[in-house]
Structure formats: structure tokens, C-alpha cells
Length: 167
Image 1 (tube, one colour):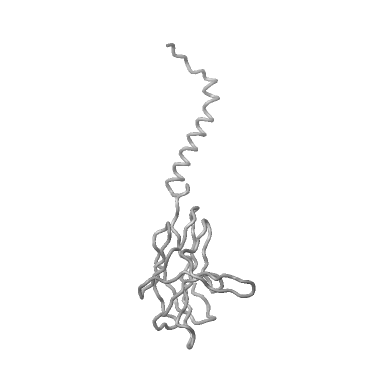
Image 2: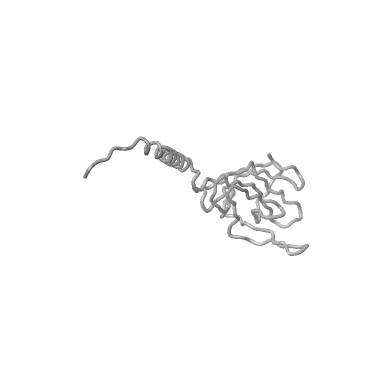
């Protein structure tokens, strides 16, 4: 077998594509290492939540609201919520039926990739059945559980109807 010498003209032709391929490999490796290549990133809270102060004479229930952001490119789901008083709370969504609607429990609430899940009185929330006595201004601790992200502890302030939401 006879070895051939590499022609300098061939080297000049091969160097740019080989260099570009090597650079692409280095950049893709770095992108993967920092979590940019299809790896889930933890869902985060977009500030504190809030809990609606039950009004006198109303049903013995209230609701908690949070805004959650998914900075990753993998969909996630809120699967359950617990709070400092113990026990799991109920995820629910408003089902619109023309001008009326109703609430129904749901097993999960989606947190879209690169987007957010905003729990609001008009769409979805966390039902708190038979809460203990609550006072306006009190802060409560919640633990949110997700399909892919680690559990997230979030504080929520008890607010009377119509008051400004905590920032």
C-alpha cells in the first residue's frame, strides 16, 4: 500500500467544511450541557399567589391562584397542590357553556413549553374545600407538584374580593 501525500489544494478545500463541522459539534455540546437541547427546565412561579378570602354566608370553600412559567421546551403539567394545613387540594377548570358555565375537577393543568399557566377566577384554580378561618393579608404556604419539574413551594396572600393582587 502506497501512502499519498495530501495535496495543499485539497487541504484548502476540506478545511472550511471540517472546521464548520467541528465548531457545530462544540456549540451543540455546549447547548446540551446548559439544558437547551430538549431537556425540561423547572417550572417557576411568576410571583406570589393569592387566595380569595371567603365571604360570610358563602359556601365553605375558596380558591388559590398562581401564575406559573415553563421556561423549557418540554410541556409540563401541574398534577397536585398541597398547603400548610395538610392534604391535597383539588385542581379545577371552568367549562364554558354558552353564556353560562360550570366548574369541574381535572387531574392536571398544562404548563405549555415557553409559556405560562395563569390560574384565575375565570379559567382554572385550586379549590380549597372547608378551609380553616382565614384573615385578609395572611400569607399561606403551598407546594405545587408537576409531572416533570421538581415540586415548587409558593407563598400566597389571602385577599378579600376585589383587592389588588400581590406583586
